[in-house]
Length: 338
Image (cartoon, rainbow, N blue to C red):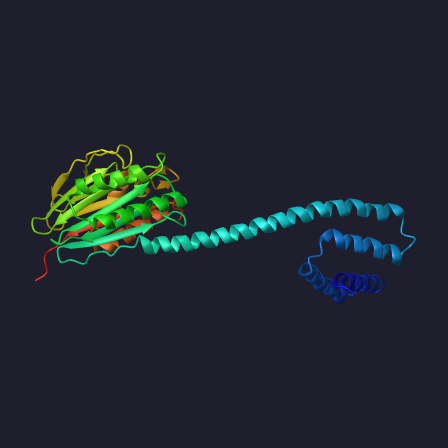
């Protein structure tokens, strides 16, 4: 006998045994049989057909109306079986996609990874957390041959895999430039790359700054990026780090203006993505002064501890549900070590 015939015979024995003696052990055997049925790909409608045939054999006097009722159950289970198999197929596909996205997110984290410079003139802290598996934010540090520290922060207007792919392209374009050149020249070069390679419906904002440890000036340019802050430690006040410029990829021959800012000892440069200022609470988006208040609360700590604590506070305000990618960078000029 083939496997299906054997299982049908076992099912008949279970039915007979249970009708004679309502023993729970028999029901346990039925559970085991169901697992075997799945293993041998026996559909629910086949089992109903078995049941109908067996009941007719055991109880020939069963009213025809009862037997006909199995026709309704049979049709129902046929539809159920098809829907169930489709559901299982979709679940399998979703699991495969989830696994692939997790692998891609891990690869992105590796590809976009950057090392925070350790210097005796800047204390640097940075945190970047994706709202979903993959991030549309990017930040990067580079030290040029003159010892200047370059810092880039970018944000794709969008989320998910397309945004992540854009960020990977920006990263490799930055690597090819190796951070050489003035910030406005860097942005102009990146703008041409984006304009030629990115879908016109996707937009990228970016800030690039270059800190010179010899004169303590920060030269910087912006391509429509969220304004950062400058903290004056003597006055104990925050001001916007103003910079104007067109988003990357809009116009091929865009020129970017370069700004300069002298950084005094203990002063801070705060750079961020719009996921920081657009944190949403029950009352709506947070104000920029809410953010500066939080930074001020932890201003006495090392830069990395400041960004970490600010992130935790804003995460709590959002009930631990980020709605956008979150990137926050702090550069603090420190006394040169002797």
